[in-house]
Image 1 (cartoon, rainbow, N blue to C red):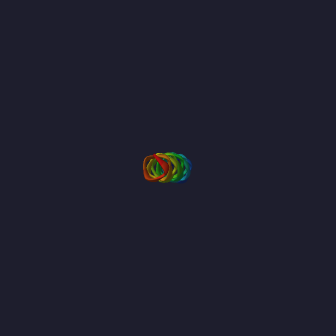
Image 2 (image 1 turned 90 degrees about the vertical axis):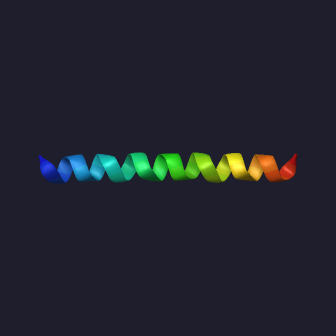
Length: 30
């Protein structure tokens, strides 16, 4: 159970990191 929680936390972290990179890319383009 603990490892499953860690995996989902990592996935969430990656998801948010990708969104931040995308937002930064959009801001640079504007």
